[in-house]
Amino acid sequence: QGGTFEVPSGSKLSTSRWNSVVGSAATVNAEDGTLVFGNGLTIKGTLNAPDGARLTVKGAWANSGTFNHNSGTVIFNPRQNNRFIKPGGTGSGKAFYNVKKVGRKNIKLKNEISLNNFEIAYKGGTWYAQGKDMSVSGSWKVGGRSNYIHGNNTVTFNGSTSQNINVSPNKGDFYNLTVSNTTDAVSLESNAIQIDNKLTISASSTLDINGQDLTASELDNAGTLQLRGDETVAITSMDVDSGTVTYDGTGTYPQLAAGDQYYDLTLNSSGSITLDADLDVNGALTITDGTLDVSSSNYGINVGGNWSNSDIFVSWSG
Image 1 (cartoon, rainbow, N blue to C red):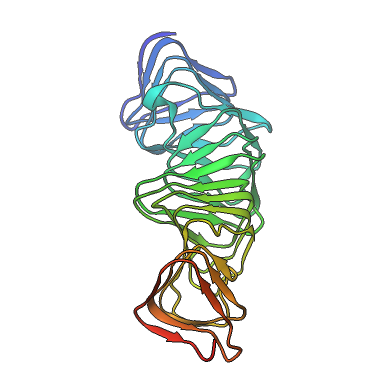
Image 2: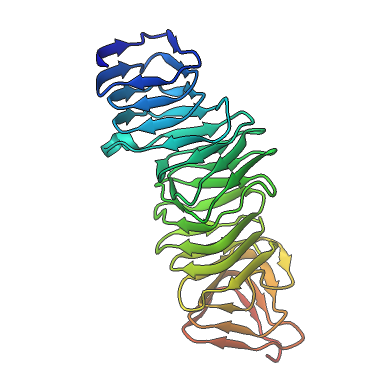
């Protein structure tokens, strides 16, 4: 309830199946130790956490005080289903660094959350976001035989270095996905993703689907959607008023994977793309590298902005 509790270097503080409370006048210093809370944890005072993967909580989490993550990982391994995470707190102590869900039980997010890396491990149970928004500055991974249920929330990737998304097949659609990393690309590491509602790419931001398939209901693009050309891309409502779609593949592709309507379209590859329909570009069409071929069917191209060709355009009689 008060004072300071020290967990020395190399030591472990382990509690049993009772809930644990850091009182409003208390501080727990465990930067160099290990913490295992056998049930829920409530932070009203200050918890200075260990770095690395040395903090495990086997119940609910509620923070109305200060949590200093010290670039460590909080491992959630609830003993029972339907345990809640209430990030809470103020200032820098509000955010997690890395969060990892393990074990077969589910867990539910009660408030919005910000963190670095997010992972649901293989056989890691289910994470219910319950419509609460999540901000991720690192990687996103959902393992096999586990699940992520969005509850109609928004996941925002807002890091300042490269970020990866890796969702095992059919283990977690996004509802709204926003890319606002203006320093480096957000990339699909492996496996397709499905966005049930809107994909938003902010200005100066890039989503590189990197050869993986993409399904989305709507695209709102002020930045760049980047793909190779051999993906399956299904976007019900394409953004043709803003943003750039860039193809950077090295193969020979019989069509434009994201369809035949764009705002700005850029080819920047050593490969070639052959049209399978008329092409409509409301903004600029740029061939930086590679070949654009209208095919022997002589498909037409409408360009609303500038035309710039630095490599090969095969016009036939189009």
